[in-house]
Image (cartoon, rainbow, N blue to C red; front, top):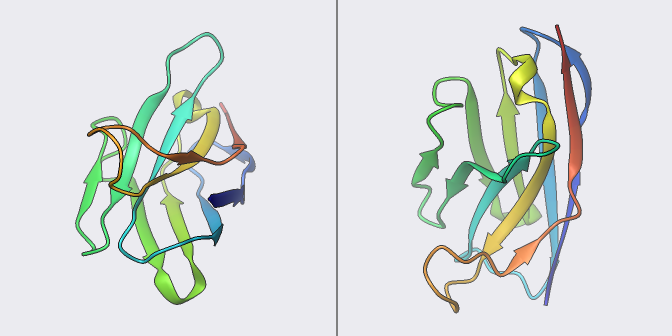
Amino acid sequence: QVQLVESGGGLVQAGGSLRLSCAASGRTSSTYAMGWFRQAPGKEREFVARIKWTGDETYGDSVKGRFTISRHNAKNTVYLQMNSLKPEDTAVYYCVCDTGKSSPGVYDYWGQGTQVTVSS
């Protein structure tokens, strides 16, 4: 099993920045893809970013150019640097892990989420 714990969420004004962290524990591997999803109240979850073990990055259209995903394998930690935040970025942000052992597009493990609120 893999456990994921997010941190770094909070309240920020529009145009500000936050950095989210996700600490992984358990049967972790640097070969696992890691990523972030978010979900606002009453809305479906939305893909934010993904990083493979090779370092290849993928971003959702709504955050391209503003968010950056990175990972520090020695610390079993993945980060999401969020710049130029907008009120529409307000959501619970979830860290996810894809072990590659399930169907494509399925993330095997999810964190409990961290709230990000962007005020206007």
